Amino acid sequence: MNDRRIRSLAIIGGGTAGWMAAAALSKSLQGMGVQIRLIESAQIEPIGVGEATIPPIMDFIRQLGIDEGELVREIKATYKLGIGYREWTRAGHFYFHPFGPASPGIGNIPFQAYWLKMFLEGKAERLEEYSIQTIAALRGRFARPVHAPNTPLNKISYALHFDAGRFAHYLRGYAQARGVQRTEGHVRHVSVRGGDGFIESVGLETGESVSADLFLDCSGLQGLLIEGALRTGYEDWSRWLPCDRAVVVHSERAAPPNPYTLVTARDAGWQWQIPLQHRDGNGYIYSSEFSGDDAARALLLRNLSGGALSEPVALRFRPGRRRAAWNRNVVALGMAAGFLEPLEATSIHLIQRGIAMLLKFFPDRDFAAADIDRYNRTLESEFARVRDFLLMHYSQTERAGPFWQYCREIPLIDSVREKIDLFRSHGRILREESDLFPVASWLAVMVGQNIIPRRYDPLVDGLDSQRIQTRLEELRSAVRACVETMPSHWDFIQNDRVCPLP
Ligand SMILES: Cc1cc2nc3c(=O)[nH]c(=O)nc-3n(C[C@H](O)[C@H](O)[C@H](O)COP(=O)(O)OP(=O)(O)OC[C@H]3O[C@@H](n4cnc5c(N)ncnc54)[C@H](O)[C@@H]3O)c2cc1C
Image (spheres, rainbow, N blue to C red):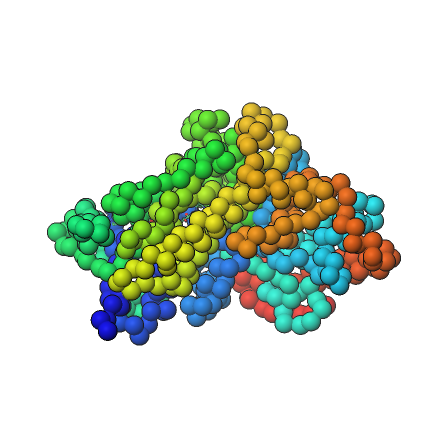
């Protein structure tokens, strides 16, 4: 039989997507004899703003065999237990979206069902009180989970905030140590093969031509290969997600870093604060229909907690996704594959998923259509579920002002409407297979945004109310006791110590 194995792979772009792909592939394809080459232009800086992540990033790091403590030191990372939403639901309001699994059920009755019954009867506290992530985050505490039964300490789920430039640089060292060849060069033209329209080679400004069997387009928003050469098309989702601009700036840290991202709703969008070890990352995501760029810049600078460390940078984007992330012999990753605003910090995760799915359907030089179709359908569905979760945030608020009024009038996608209707009726949460966020996330965000179900699940009436109340009280006290034993987040970063059991 002919050897149809992929022999050469070229990654175009050296931002987060390019170096994540280079690192993961250099490890996973070891021994297959695939030559991996990454080309990055010195003329176009990586976007460099993806600084907040979600828990699956920890699997990515572990699968590469990277030492977590060393990484945290090198990339000036902090830990993240969730997101605090300030002023989002309405003026003066705050709620927390914690990572992590739901609290334990009783038999086959899930936590949210029995908590809801008690809450509606005025016999349970706010949801936040039962979440170790939330209480720890708001008290500035952090510890990794401990391996012990029956303690909320074994439920801690976390992610990182990091300096995106340092993260890419770290992965670059990792990938180069495993044989990835790096070329600093600017791609000037792309050669498409006659007949099947596959990419044959890219031509660099220096005159060098680089050919490969498989190309990864990690060139950022423009999508140099996937769009520039292959005209794959882009599905614009701005009818559901109205923001299309960002202004970003780094600032001095005014206090020890919190183990959570702070999101604050503003007149035409929202502002983030991401605390790192050496500075804060800040940005304002807004809709150009509702704010001018100068006003947005001024608003951001007015609302920093420490002095700005640089001039703010303005960015434009179009929410949506490439119609096919994999087209012929090109797989687009990162901004080249699509972009959804970072409210729930999902873009780096979608890069990770793109890489994982590429490995699952890794091609040979015949590029089987069935593999490509399945890859595209999976990624499409994962992008769409993230979009739905974001849409839910925008559609359910009580905030005043034209932008927020406009958001409330955006027609809901059927699957989002169904989720909200099911929750309103009996507090039930429907989770699709491709949903990235677990039931606990939907619960925290829906309750946080004041969607309070009219009734609880009738099955809860099969449980003794006193037993539920005792369980809730035990859970709440266990959470408090555990948080007491956790070190401060800043102390943990500096000393990385194991949390004792209470
Ligand atoms: C405002 C904002 C905030 C964000 N915040 C988050 C967040 O908190 N969490 C999260 O998960 N994601 C976030 N993202 C998304 C995240 O930044 C990106 O997913 C991530 O940085 C990946 O970028 P990239 O590698 O695709 O592109 P880029 O970083 O833009 O890299 C593109 C690369 O391609 C190279 N290149 C371009 N053209 C050529 C050429 N002609 N020849 C050679 N090389 C070329 C460039 O030199 C560069 O190396 C945010 C995005 C924005 C816009």
